[in-house]
Image (tube, rainbow, N blue to C red; front, side):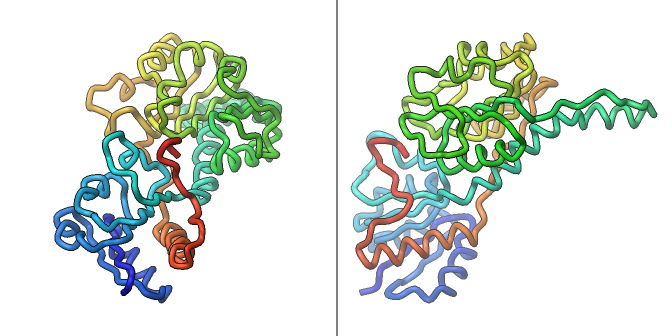
Length: 313
């Protein structure tokens, strides 16, 4: 019998076209863009490829589920206590590094090359030859050095920057000059010019960017969050920004999304909000990861990007 695949995503039909072109063996595909559609065909589904937020609601209706391939890097909706965890779970990794580097260094250069100030001077016909800051010899701290952090570290080296990495235990990236591990996060943050958060959401990382960490930064530092909104104590961040104890924050993710109307961040001149758009998934790359893993699955080989439920990533 063929393996029954349910694609559950807003991009379900696009994914289906890509997977069908791959001519995978022994597979029967159903593509759904809503839970209502999916619930009608879920009983005999063995594999689900889709968005964790949608899949979570469908779990009780998937008695034969063996494997979920998420279309996101973050799979928090599927990790909650009380949910069934008796299946293989894989996520998307290794494709977001270049996009995150574009985002992070785009905003760093935006600030250091004084682009807004130059435009304001141009409108007033003022010859503004204030020297810009350079990235050379500045220190960037990467809160998380997985595949994304490693790519950021490599890009930072291109600009001649000093790179610190904060991880639970690993020290695999050759572009990191110095590693720090828990509980030495204050030493890691001390005097950083740029702090970039790329950690996953786990019980250990909730509000890891707190008052003490922010106070350890250089007062001219930029804080950039492209990881998870849960990493940040937003009240502490708000207070540091209002007191100009750090220069600015570039925030792509928040504790609650979308960010509520009237939230103080909206009106703060030193906050830049990008509405969870730092690294949007490319359907072609995402489908290719599923295709490779499917071939491993039918050969009973270990799947790539396996998430360990007990670890949270």
